[in-house]
Amino acid sequence: MQIIKLEEPFDKAQIPAGSVVLALGFFDGVHRGHQAVIETARQEARKRGVKLAIMTLTPHPSIIFQHVPPEKVTYLTSLERKLQLFARFGAEIAYVVALNSQVSKMGPQEFVDKYMVGLHAQAIVAGEDYTYGTEKIANMELLPQYAQARFAVIKVRHLKQMGQKISSTRIRTCLDHGQITQANHLLGYCYENDGVIVHGKQVGRTLGFPTINISVGQGERLPAEGIYAVKVRLLGKTVDGMASIGRNETFGSNNAPTLEINLLDFSQMVYGEHVVVQWHQYLRGQVKFPNAQALIVQLKRDEKNVRAYFAAK
Image 1: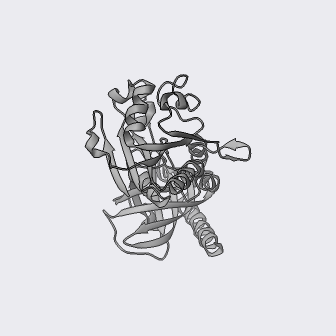
Image 2 (image 1 turned 135 degrees about the horizontal axis):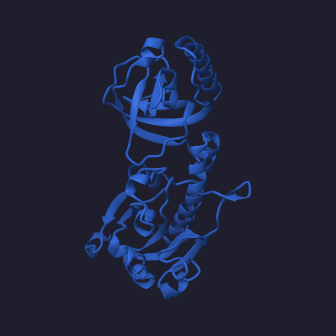
Image 3 (image 1 turned 135 degrees about the vertical axis):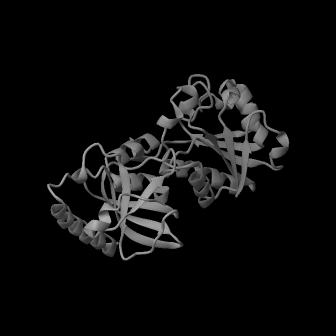
């Protein structure tokens, strides 16, 4: 997949020759609803004999339009993972548009001319609520007017589950409540976090459950505090694990939240290594135990539950 980063004002020479079908959206999470848009665009591109291109923006629109501080915004997918998913679902070209002040101030006609016609789109495919500026004047209903018969407009209806729209907001809510199974169902794949293994307080080692401490990528959204069954990719391997997101309240108050994972049947030293954590199952909430021995008893139960969960899959 060819990745092309555009920053206004961009050089037209960056745009490959040849027509495309262009899928549009922010695509945070690249969930099942987004996948329906991409698949519709892929089929249209195949029918027309042209390449499938996807255009996304960075950073999140709320930072620019609603003035949300960047450090307050978390993502379901980093830009890197989003691009990996685009490639998995068939994109041949990915356009990453820097959402700067020049882009945000564009009127709808200028945006259409530069970022749809200018990218050689034969057809535009987007979800029914896609906007390209102020919602009332730059929505999918009005796009044919701005297109001026230069490209086809294909509107994809919302994909629903249990009567509700599948959306990034809904998935974030699931994660915030530890509803990993539901989040994964809406995503169409297991939720993941990237991170680096860092030094911790090594409390788990003294309990007989050594853990790796993980610093996740900036802006990535973690699930709610609790204990989870996870798979961890590191050193070219995939290892089952028991993850804890919490504050270790058994050993003191006012601790900062941490992500620690006890890797099952794995004992290598891996400080500084990059890892990908794949979230599979929520097991229980965090509990402040009266003493270390009570915690050890529970950790043994948790390990048994994790092993049983993966053995049954």
